[in-house]
Image (cartoon, rainbow, N blue to C red; front, side, top):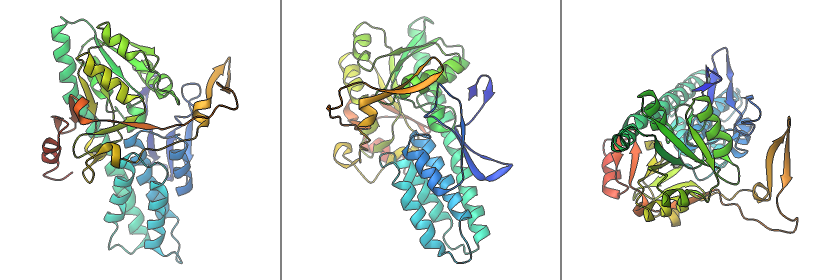
Length: 368
């Protein structure tokens, strides 16, 4: 997608510098646009854990590129299988909730089975990484094609007036390498001449909505309005929301979805106000091994400092400030679980399905 008219992906390999993974440092946006270079497994781990790269598909792609970097660390004395298994375990420990990370990393381990040559292992790892990257982008495009039909139908009912879409956190191209999941239908609606407007939840405590989604929409010239996390329900009561679309970091076989903390509250408000609530999610974010999201999805707990402090810009200076007394304690759950009963449907690259076990299992019956 575009930044000041120039196309970028959020994670990529520079063809002229194939030993380096490049990312747009999401922790610096929107105040500073910086491309960060990652040249080791540890660099990738830190970028994921510190959220320089974030979003389930994007960290999956970063993780698989990290495995490629791990193959470049192999020497004549390296115990290859042990080294790569350790790298995989290390990378997967960077953030536990999004299933995409372990899914992508394990794909590399599977694809290099039976290969002994160091150069061939590296070649296969890079090939796998590039394939996963392209596949994730294509999944987002397909999600957009299915999701735009929802927006189109609402637009027809509104006689062409703008369709008001509410989203939470950032499930855009920054989070997904390109296009995004929740944002792909919005971009395609724009491309099809459908009038849209996006309500963007600020998304405390890291403000991914305010800092990232607004940044994306601004650069794509999509009309949008930033709101506080608690505003969505009131907007729904006033008839100002037509549709909710969020992303998800992990979906159970029964349709429960883990997404950024605060999503559950939005789903409850949407249900109470008869507003359709859709989750845009690629097949790589499904975990068919678990059924109960609340009991089985590992929810990351991050530093309380992200809650007690915030970051902003004062003039040209980016600074951090504390928002409460130094004696105040905080807890920082990064995700919550939206139960399937609150979800109108799941927008996948294979079509829109109900958030029910039989529909999800059927989606995967021919393999992922």
